[in-house]
Length: 378
Image 1 (cartoon, rainbow, N blue to C red):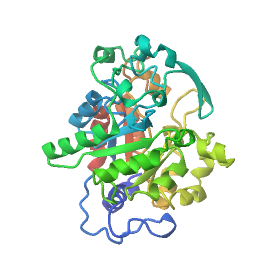
Image 2: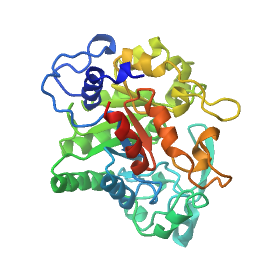
Image 3: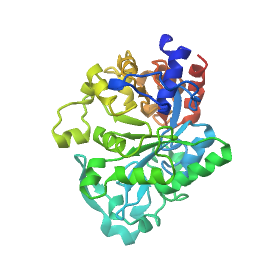
């Protein structure tokens, strides 16, 4: 563990995370030191990503959540992007907005409730692609899991659903105010599904990034997707660093399902699979169980070789997601019997950070940063 965190290794990983320099990644995705001399290490290692903002404290994907995450010190703020009927990109974790907005309280939209199949899952509710942006802006955001985060419901109705354009302008304003760039972690959600509807995400993301000068290799954002083909498509449009998100080991990316590609995440995290990913991405964002699996009792097991193997392929790792509440924690880190109470979140953060990962998503950036500070000193 300590060997992977020596200063020389951390410097290389920091530059890799930034995706900067004349030759950031060499042949077959192998890390290259060429062009890195004198590059400022703008992001720390390990970095902390505010997952949907600071969604442990404010309703997710609102400016309240984004602003709090930034004020807490999160190194990067995440956005998930879905389109409206008229082609605008908005920030929602899913296109199904039933649980995250007050749409059900709007009688004028009662007839928009419908059942759809999205990436193989049958869902009933209201969907962004059935609303114009003007219609969507009449709604207000609310807490997605009120039973777990009852304190967040205080803020129900305070904020609108933000557009990606509004987030980019916010990042520019905050950057000027703070005298430093505001980093974003931007995800294309269900890209194959939306492309079939004529609402391709990648071109819209690239257009917005270019309009704000955030499309370059050293631009302050990561692009991410659970579909490798979306990352490949983005790679033809913009040069900023890209991260392939990976679910559990037995899952398959939805674009693989559509294309008849039999590979699973387990195949993609083998040395051969990681080498393939490194041909078009600079990092991976795996489910935490890919880094440290849980045993049959839900307790943390032994770390896998994925961190070592990904680093050998020249990839950084930004796994997801650590939350403070017992219900989300491994069984051996829960405290008391209340599933909504906080457990030993600091212990969990340290367990994952101790594997040598380069960053971590969290709903609780303040807790994550406290844990990360210990590792940044090494």
